[in-house]
Image 1 (tube, rainbow, N blue to C red):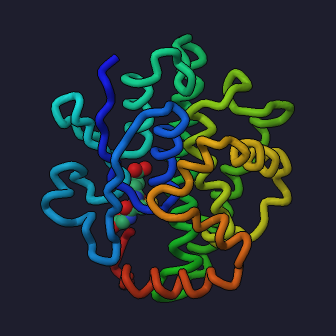
Image 2: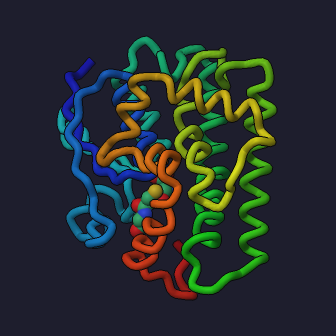
Length: 244
Ligand SMILES: N[C@@H](CCC(=O)N[C@@H](CS)C(=O)NCC(=O)O)C(=O)O
């Protein structure tokens, strides 16, 4: 195995912490470059060479000829392929591996975009569009019900062990209340799954990269959430033609 020398470009968001959680779980040393959304650093030419899509997270693997990887799911798989020789987070057995990859795709094509849009229309859209709020909020909850059912009688999604399947959806589901889904009481398996994963020391470390974990802060101080949303609205400056 190559000795890892990785830079993680990130910000304190569910997609960003997916990657720091994996780096921490695998004990891979890494440098952090915080990307400032306020300064639109993610759209600057130097960063677009690393991630042509202009979003966090991304990594550069200096130990492998400055190889760049973007898209959180792809980064998680890359890290396991190169730095998880025992298949701790991405199993070697083809069927278990396929199951983990299925949950990765489920998050990347489902929970991420749907909950992202729910958050946008609930918090940031310049005009209130009840149809969009309802559509994305309900679809996110439907996806939560899929996860909740899959967790029935199990601690984790695949082989009853913590894998990328759990690591990828956990940061989003726990941030439900930041995206307009105030309660997940109707999904008891998800609630205990979140607590179980949050109890892992490496996960806690990953959640605090590059800035202190906002979900925890807002859980303890809900009154700070409004101020945060107001600030974020200010620097993203969404207009009615934006697709973000
Ligand atoms: N599908 C991408 C989504 C990445 C993404 O949406 N990143 C957001 C933060 S969570 C971002 O960089 N937003 C800033 C922007 O769009 O300019 C992934 O999973 O990596």
